[in-house]
Image 1 (cartoon, helix red, strand yellow):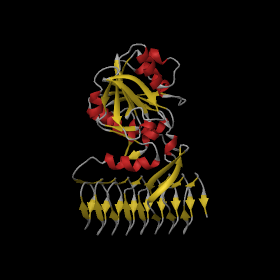
Image 2 (cartoon, helix red, strand yellow):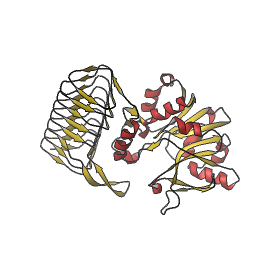
Image 3 (cartoon, rainbow, N blue to C red):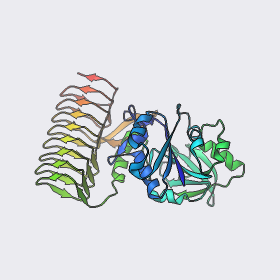
Image 4 (tube, helix red, strand yellow):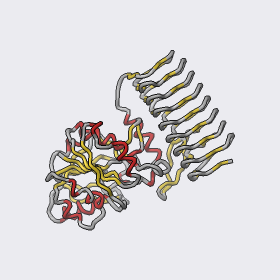
Length: 387
């Protein structure tokens, strides 16, 4: 079996985290979203993969290479302009060698069970959703799909299309110059093709920055303790992973689910609470409190910081006594007002000055410098200096 992964998109709604990398390379539980898709395929026995890349494509190619580290073979097709999912799939046509093949979105966490369920041609995976208006929804007659309706304004169905398919090669003939894959599927249904649906047992979507926190928590599906570093006099409760060469300093308290990457240092006297992932080469100083956070690689968090419900991207420096306040906030994204419980979202290579307070829902762009003793509220553009 062969699979095509569509991984060319930017993910504009996830900014600032997709300015320097595509959405598929945003990390949850210390792994890019795309890596979960590759692992699901490998676990289901699918070893031949074509990735369609485009926006910031080198971030994908440099990370995955030829796929041998995951026990798969990866080839790449390039979508030079991101103008639709059907157009993206069309770029892989010359690399598809089998008569039937899978197509998966690279920007959703998916499980091997879902891949295995797509075991026959002309099937589409669905998930029951409480927010169907954000997606395409399936209109069914029994198990057959009558139509896929994109982002309906009313309650048409709560079965959303998760972007996972099993097609035959003739899909390429139907694509033609069409850009949208759902449009192509609907056209084929109108012309007599019988599409059926299967349920996606494991599927998680990241649309907005605050979704990273939710999916990060759900992606920590491991159990037990795995400690590859040095543990001083530390209390560890629940499911915790600590990467090799990392150090947990004395009198710290770690409560899982929690992941600490490689070559990182925590504490002393720091508290890491559940649903927190800490990347590689991270330094968390003494007397810090971190809860429900995604901390990227090469981040420095100096002593006495309090971070809750926040995402801190790679290369940031958080100076002493900084506080991220978590509460309900109204955030404008994608032209819509969203009321969410959140802390702050900080892009790559930022420097947050000592004793700064980031209010709920703050979004700090990439390469921002914030002086000490500031109160940050709302959105700060990339490369800004807050004096």
